[in-house]
Image (cartoon, rainbow, N blue to C red; front, side):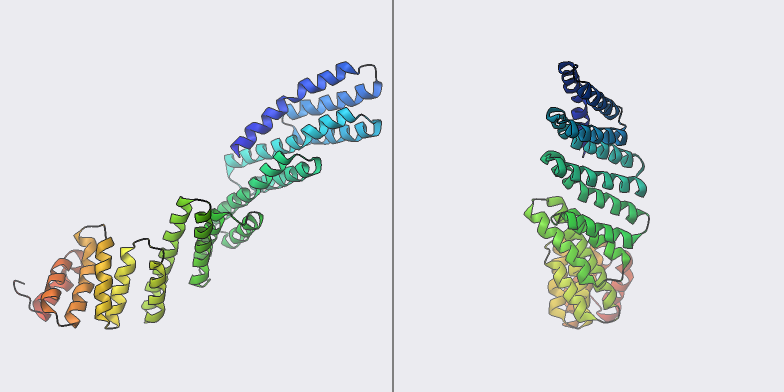
Length: 339
């Protein structure tokens, strides 16, 4: 978009030489002089960034040039007019950047749509393509403003527009997932499906950052839902969500820890041990961070009557919030040696 701004303004500055040459070469023709003066005034308004006035005068010039059969002036107008639309759009986007308001972004969106239409009308593929590429980004920017203002439903609708204009816009799919999660009344797998689409598109276009962010948010979404429903003893669904979370291969220690916790609640000690050990492999924190994992490991070994393994695990669990529960296990329930 910054490149578009620079390009549009640079093209405006090239107008003056072409107009003066035309005027000097045909000063004897009154109609040509009148139309060239109108063209000159349009060009001057464009240089002054009075884009609406410039556009109207260029279109009037075009109409009069056609009526007078002045094909060379028509060619000049057709060559410049789409770029004036583009410059106006770029200017309005710059104004939006300064204030980040909905009215400003709406004006910018309308201006880029008009630039796209002008590019199509006059056969300027560069202007048309630049505008077409900018429009989904503008919708995305609008959705961010709406999101920050708390209008989540509107933000979701605007993201649909961004995706409609660019079906390969991975960032928009990612943001859609965040918005639906914040709204809070959508099924978890529906929310995750938007992150999945961001991953798929991001992979296809080498967008590593989006891919990684989408995977992390998918895991976070599934993890939160699994913990929530496990509190109401919906263990099967919780395991389903946590298992899906592991498919993203983000190496989440917390996901494996929660699996160990749930398997212990279901008295599935072997699965609990397996997942607790995997959690320890991925946990990057210190002894306090690992304490909760060792505690679940100790519980699993205790249920299997493997006292030595249980005592060893609880010893490693005796830190932070798990110090007292682990000590109770070692001293009262297991009567571990040296405790």
